[in-house]
Every structure is written in structure tokens, then in C-alpha cells.
Length: 164
Image 1 (cartoon, rainbow, N blue to C red):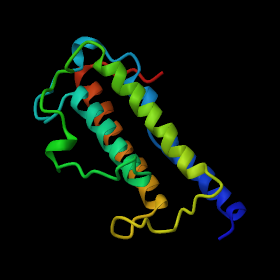
Image 2 (cartoon, rainbow, N blue to C red; image 1 turned 90 degrees about the horizontal axis):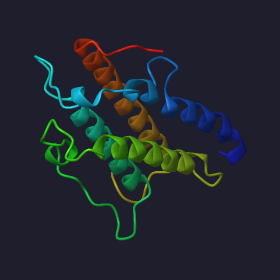
Image 3 (spheres, one colour; image 1 turned 60 degrees about the vertical axis):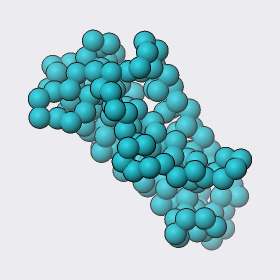
């Protein structure tokens, strides 16, 4: 498939990765999240907002590293332990903001992979088991949407959801 023919698909993937067409955006979900509520685990829920946010960062970074392995190659993360922070509390005061920034930054890097004119969305990676860039883009979008929904629900339960 010619690069020009893939451009409409790449634009649709960009919009999907940015979210907001059928659900809250990442920015909506994390905006003005009260510091004193970030470690609260509501009754009957297994995670705090911090744990969900950090899980999103770890997973997105893992997918980015899988799609464009860093020097030394892709390093598998142990499932599920490696994908979830144990503590419901951010480890230090700047953790939340650093994680939000890392999610934004890694998403931009992934979007650049997809937007690259030489990128073949359908070509299986030489590593893995048949995965390709299209599959990984859809995986990020699906995973993010799922957990953003959980963050919105958590905010509703805590009485702090005010979609602007």
C-alpha cells in the first residue's frame, strides 16, 4: 500500500490516540485532580487514581518500546506485577505531574512512529508474534480508553468529576 494511500488511516489513528470522540480525553480525566484524592481507593474498587495513572504510563511506555525498541532491544515486563504500582500513593510529591508528562511525551513519540511517511502500519515486526504498528496503535487507544473510563468513574465516586 502506498504511503499516500495510508495517510487517511494514519490521521484516523492520530485522532483515535488523542481520544475524546466517544469519551473523555486524557486531559479531561486528569485535569485538576485533587492531590488529597490521588491515593484514595474507593470502596469496592481495587485501585487508586495514582495506580491507574501509573499503570497507563507503564503500559503505554511498554507498547512504545515494543514498537520501536530502544538500544539493546525490547525488554519484557513481568505481568501483572511490573505493570501496576503496589502502593496507592504516589511515591513523592511530583510523581503525579511527572507521570502525566511522561504519558503525554510517550504518546507524542508513538504518534510520530505512526505518522512517519515510511511507516508500514501492516508489516509485522521482526520480533514478537505477528504484531504490527496498527495493532499497537489500536492497543494503546483501547487500553487508554478503558482506564480513562475507570478514572472518570473513580472521580464520580469521589465526587470530583466536573467535566468542563
